[in-house]
Image (tube, one colour):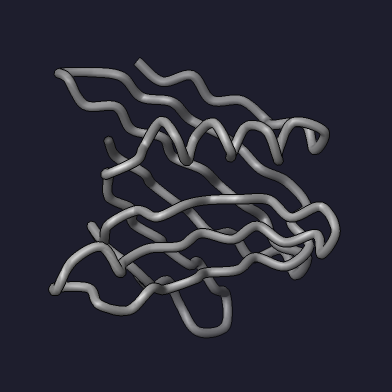
Length: 116
């Protein structure tokens, strides 16, 4: 069952801190949707490190990789000046999954899916 809602900016920092703890040891997929260059996967099923909102720089950062020998380097995906964040929580069959839609300042969306 999905529960999609628009996340108020005042809750972004604390929400992503909780999400990082909840999905420790999980995997992440990062999909960038771009009108000029087309849609593309930046990461698929990589080890999840963290997701955070930095209010000082007004950036959303997702980090993946660097958990084992298969992914020795960390990838950091940054959305500068996010305008809107939508969260979709999906529970089912023992798996927990969060899908986050982030609209950047330029209007291009990024979809981040984190699985426990």
